[in-house]
Image (cartoon, rainbow, N blue to C red; front, side):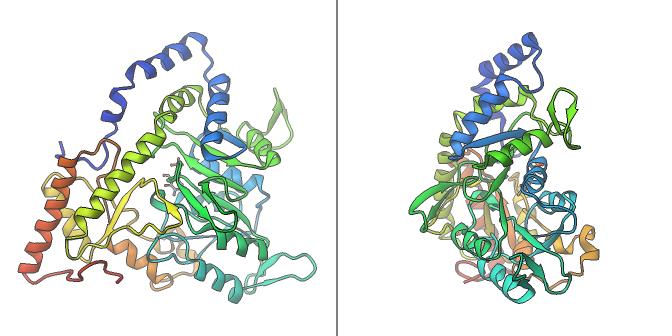
Length: 409
Ligand SMILES: Cc1ncc(COP(=O)(O)O)c(C=O)c1O
């Protein structure tokens, strides 16, 4: 048993046991396992949390991304832009919708899509057809139809300039908010804080158990302010049915179970408090780690209120530090160790080492520390003291990392 686990869900869940049991008992008695009032109530309350008109429950975050793309009109042969440092589900969903994923590099401070690289891709690799207004890739001559910014680690990407570029190039914006339930972005344009999932045409959320809002299995949702998109997703998730055994299109088996919706409803009422606890843990990590030489801290711009799904530091000799912490019973994670453009799955896409230098550098330097609501001060002290011990030892033996603050500074 780890002294400090990377993630501890049991502590969160133990106080809610009676409410969870009530959900199981209710579902067993009314035998309404698919759809029904629990799913509808969860959709209403989750849409409200996201500051959005509609939420449609689906089977997973991957379903949510795929259905959002299809419902927004992405089709065979379209090109869709995203980043290489994300979970593969982002680009899988693009391919599963029949489109081609195109990567642009990320910002080294936020790890989210770089607005400069996105602009550069659109300005240098694309042209706008004067008659249709569609953006085309100059080499493939395929339409570039959408962009998926990923709100990685619980922090919203810089959406104002992304939405402005999307307007200019007629791109659909689908937010990958799978790690960002309740995260906020200050929009200069709208002069207000906006919730993740309420900014683009649609957004995908995952309720995979380890997420800030996690089910007891697979689950996801799409949020949107567009009623037509919401209706299309409700049809797609249910085999294209518009009524019992009447299929306007071929769809998918991608529904949200009533049991999962019931569990999520119980947990949703605690989400804001849990997110605040994560923010407090992050603040304390920042204060303690600021004094440790060789550790780059997460960057939260003034326009972001992160919900710290993950607390990710940057260090030069990441693998050695991870092993050192593991030996001391401290759990850590890598999100993600290999950028998508260098995965075998995309070896036919023509990318090579050096194609996205920032993503590549991040992948080899990042380390996710224990982070969950309920992580206590004693556990945080153990983590920080162990990192400090490692840094001092390594300095003494003349190895590694000697930058005073961030490896990027
Ligand atoms: C950024 C991101 N996108 C997509 C997904 C896919 O979600 P799911 O695992 O629920 O299909 C995840 C979750 O693992 C994720 O972290």
